[in-house]
Length: 208
Image 1 (tube, one colour):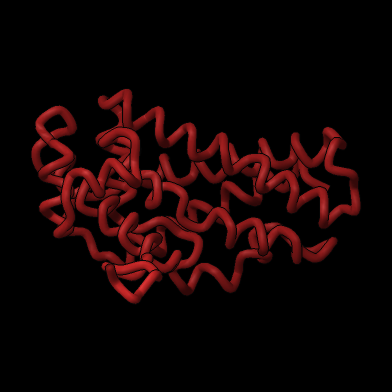
Image 2 (image 1 turned 180 degrees about the vertical axis):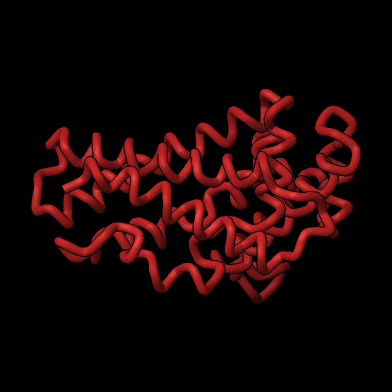
């Protein structure tokens, strides 16, 4: 018999570490998908690229296509928080002014590569659309809070749908016309920011 009665072995992972592992898996999956295609990529390969087992990959994600979701969901909470503090009378693009300089809300170049691949990979396209579908009620709650409206009011839902569509269209528009891998990263990011600003301005015309 042993005197100790507590847990033994490795300590549980923190939420921060779990989030970091998910992101590492997502980036490795994108690299492999782009290099060799989705069909040729296995869970074992994704795990090996990160230094974890395939079992760990499947613990975090149900399918190999879903591994990319953390990259696609970048910025949802940050955008929602900006919407809550969007001042009435202030143009919508300006509500995100502080975000353009950092990495909090704008997707990285790996998302552009992923979206270009998703044009022919139905599984990846489904994950991209599902991510936006799940983001929409988050935006709706933020807009309802901003407007002082009840959660069951239809107006925030419509505003959120317009905003969500604008963000998706902007990122896709940028990704589909982006230059090759030799493009300057800073210029590409500035172009994406401009595209998102334009899309938000269009959407804001119908949000009061």
